[in-house]
Amino acid sequence: MKKNLIFFILSLFLAQEVIAKEGMPQLNPEFWLSQIFWLIIFFGLLYFLIHKFFSPKLFSLIDKRADLLRSLISETENNKNQIQKLDNEYNKIIDEAKKNSKEISAKLNDEFNEKISIKKKEFENYLNAETTKVENDINHFKQQALDNISEIASEFSKELIEKITGTKPNDSNLKAIISEISKKQKESRYV
Amino acid sequence: MATNPMQQFEVHKIGPSLSINGIDISFTNSSLFMMISTILIITFFILGTKKVSIIPGKIQILNELVFNFISKMINETVGSDAKPYFPFILTLFIFILTMNMVGLLPYSFTVTSQVIITFFFAIIIFIGVTIVGFVKNGLGFLKIFVPSGIPVFLLPLLVVIEIISFLSRPISLSVRLFANMLAGHTMLKVFGGFVVSLGILGGWLPLSFSVALTALEILVAFLQAYVFAVLSCIYLNDALHMHH
Image (cartoon, rainbow over all chains, first blue to last red; front, top):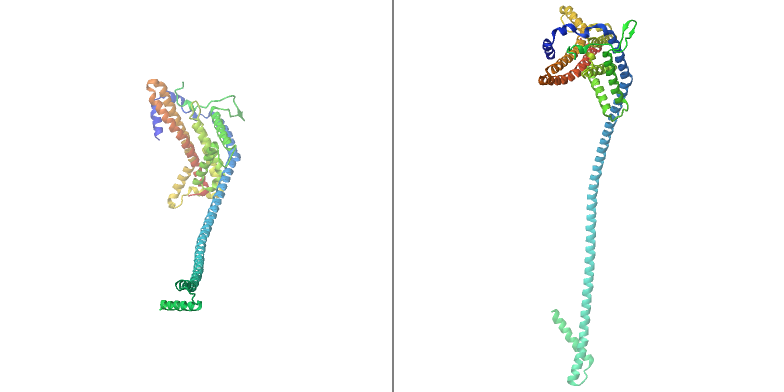
């Protein structure tokens, strides 16, 4: 509208006689039929080419692309579901493994504690046995030592008496006296 | 140099006179620019569809852009049942757009500034839409002249108005495009004339106007092609779906 107004105002400034003389060439019907003829030819040609070649080619491609996109979207959706499923399975396996590992760990711990207690008991038994054995040995050696002390004392006393008196004392009497003394000593020790 | 701004719209013969049964079909400057536009469009589509691939090239993207633009426009205005008319609407839009754009080049000719051209397009659409309407709806198509929900006593008046409105469609459609092209190009020519007549000292102002007007005309060239195609779709929609 504005454009037409400007055009009108500007046209007032133009040489009026020129416009009046020339008028609008579009309204001259001299070449109307010729223009329509060529318009039909070129428009018809263009329509034919677009309808028969360009349009089907591009539309089939656009449809093909849409199908491809649809299939890719569907594939992605499937993969996503598959991943979700695998993730769930993985989590399930991990949970199960954690549970199993806890159970196994507890079981192994029990077994280990049991073994440790058995070994401890065995070791204690062995230690008791060894202690008893050693104590017995000590007692035995003690007894043996005590027995030998009588003999040594008898021998020593015999030699001492012989040196002091110059006579050989009777062995049996000497042994009886020593054993009597040692017996008394033992008794006094235990009393 | 021609000072008459209307001279640019003059049609003149190029080459020998041609006639069929006494009808002059001589090749004119108008026909030449129709041909140039057609060649440009065909080249554009050939380059775009030569090696079509799922991942498109630059020209294929432009081709698809035009296809999707028109396809979307038809879907929005008419609906999905208008797919058979897609090639016609696309041809109409791209042909008018190219002729408008080519007309903006210096020393070229604007085919769409010829009223007979725009009127021929409009009358083809008018006749086509009327045929589609009768084929699709039979005589029920005449209901288009009878608006629904109107008091009976107003009907005779409204039916006459609807008939006049329907018959004036080709005139409004053709004159809209023709007048826009005529006004725009005349203004460009007038401002161009001012640049020359005012010379190097005073010509800068009209020159800057010319530059701004050229940008505006590019917009108008696209807009008018779009409006022509959209109105054609709306008329088609009336014939296919009978909104009255």
